[in-house]
Image 1 (cartoon, rainbow, N blue to C red):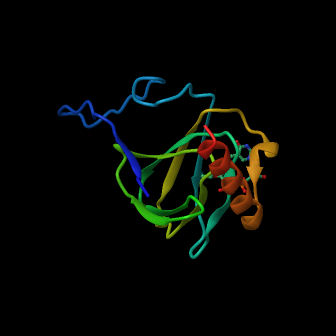
Image 2: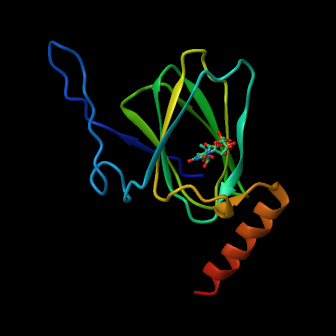
Length: 140
Ligand code: T46
């Protein structure tokens, strides 16, 4: 699986660092929502779902965590531990977030507003969904 990491240019000077993120420039979609996950209890795994349409960039702006990506055929584990590095997560991608350090803050930039109908929360439903997507793509 091709993992898509995005690197952001820090504007550093003697005072410290600043990173600015602009839609369509640093982020490959219109940013319609931002949320962040913090104070994660030890041993917790979150996620366990995919999205039908949503695209996201995940940035661990403090501390570290790991993301397990699964496109229905291959799985990959990605470590996020830098505030100037993002992980692009496409639609139709199962994700699980785990190994959060106690100080981890995982910020997410999302291409759509929150919509529960966009979630696929059952793994077998996800496998069926991606196999149907593959059939559609193969037929093009
Ligand atoms: C994803 C991963 C990386 C809202 O009310 N608005 C929101 O925008 C979001 C994201 C969540 N919520 C509510 C819904 C639940 O009652 O917050 C609660 C926790 O959400 P959830 O269990 O979906 O959180 P995660 O960490 O399992 O998943 C989240 C995102 O939902 C998901 O899109 O890709 O982070």
